[in-house]
Amino acid sequence: MRNITLKPAMTGLTRLLSAAAILLTLTACNTTEIAAVEEPAAVPMTGKTDDPAPGFETVSAGTEEDFILNVGRRTYFTQDSAALDPVAKATLDKQAIWLNSNPRWLVKLQGFSDDSGSASKMETLSQKRADAAMAYLASKGVDPNRMWAKGYGNDREVRDCTERSCKVQNRRVVSNLRTERDTL
Image (cartoon, rainbow, N blue to C red; front, side, top):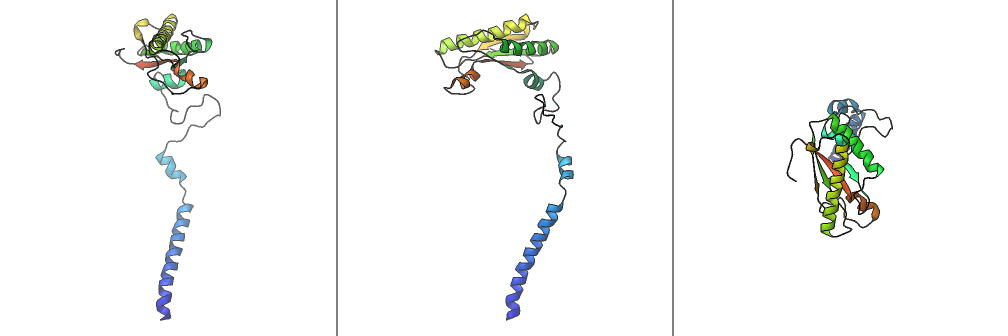
């Protein structure tokens, strides 16, 4: 009778030891070689502000990704204004240089506003913002025939909020690249 009660205990102990041996074997494996096959090596980061964002290390010059990541497509405005401040002009200067170097691209300038006024007032203001960005780019040599502007008011808010620091994100012009002209 004792042999019968010991046999199941030995089987459980054997299973436990086998599982432990398998776990030890797996943890001893070197997964670095497997990862190198499955994922490309990461570009070494230098700690500088112009390091590429993870996944964007191989963005080709002249692509839409290049424009978004390396130039910037958003121009911001102060409340109730379509005037270009020095920061907005610096963004548009970079856009103009890029667009003049990449003449195959068209650009749709989309103006937006926050909700600090009536819908019609905000739509008018957002159109003035888009027009101001387009006029500035044209003054920097971008062919006006490659651009068109549309104000959307506050219909497409980035964030719905009441804080001043948040609302500024809605007061913008977004320069969207196109390969052909679309409807306004």
